Image: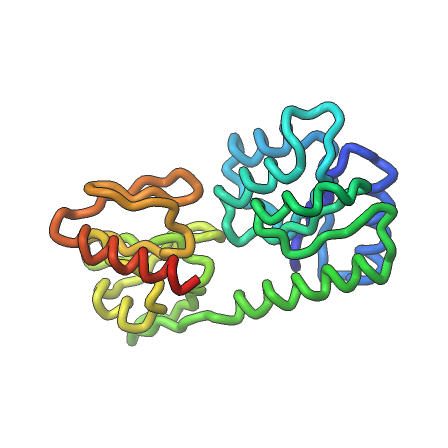
Length: 237
């Protein structure tokens, strides 16, 4: 089940959108209502919960510190896989929304057909991403890992730890063997770490920083090649 956060300070707007979603996607989508975006961000931070899959984000917040574009950028830095559908009654914001990598843009009052078109598009994107799973097998165990949702891989005492959107998975395997299976966007930055370039914000001598603020060590002998591969990834995108 996918989770959609409707983020708007107008209760009627939230209820109207919630009713449409629940009618169009019964048993497929769970809706959460966010009228206080600052409180929502604080809860995510304190409880270390995973963000929703999709945020339907109002751009103009009357009583908050920032606008919806700024809040979306903040959320996507911590949760790069979050899909954002912007919602506004002010069309003049349209040129600014691309700072937050929007998946769609809706104008109030929201029409059912337009909302469904937007959600259908985003749901297909999410399902395609989630479908890219890799099966890791030994004679004793089989697990499924989704590289697209893996932030980084950590190696410790013959075990690999896959840190990702849905927490941490453990598997007995060598790092070199794993990287032969995983996509090229995984960059070896240290004897014990490989990072997914899609979640990498910056890399420098001795340190790599992810969008969620995580910091990983970069070994001296791997820095030059890791930097080159990160630049190749950026240019390729």
